Image 1: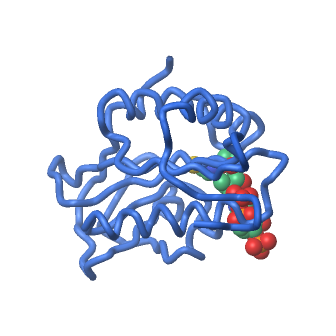
Image 2: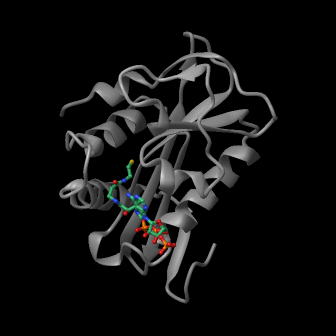
Length: 172
Ligand SMILES: CC(C)(COP(=O)(O)OP(=O)(O)OC[C@H]1O[C@@H](n2cnc3c(N)ncnc32)[C@H](O)[C@@H]1OP(=O)(O)O)[C@@H](O)C(=O)NCCC(=O)NCCS
């Protein structure tokens, strides 16, 4: 998928891995609400075979954006739902639509995989523009309810407590 004449959205390749790591560190360096562990989360998800979707925004050989999606459980069960994030755009290229293109492409990839839905933790104003909404009953304890949103691909939103992959606890 071509975003501008120079930015291409595509699945990650082996040689992107160190670039994704560096990009993730850079993107979250001055971000709010971060423990600066996102780069480790991406590594551990990949190691665990849980990086269901991993898309890069590439400019020639450079990686300027990345979006990760991994499975989540609801009340401990696999119900075909996934979690979006971390998502990162090179600070020098933020605000140019790359994040939106990654979001659209990542959600499309999930739909094509037959996913039932996706959750996201983050700024409600940003994610609502992609169709995410707060759904009472689908909960992520510990954060204000408006920061946890969901989008259903099959019309149903499950009820219960959402748990991300163990890799989200990674600190190294
Ligand atoms: C969040 C992020 C991925 C967005 O990427 P981006 O390429 O800057 O996004 P876009 O250019 O597509 O932005 C689309 C719109 O969202 C707005 N926006 C961007 N980040 C936002 C945020 N954190 N909160 C609210 N709105 C935001 C932009 O101003 C833009 O608005 P506009 O269309 O009215 O001009 C990027 O800013 C980033 O890497 N941030 C640091 C890491 C982070 O916080 N990731 C998200 C948590 S996992």
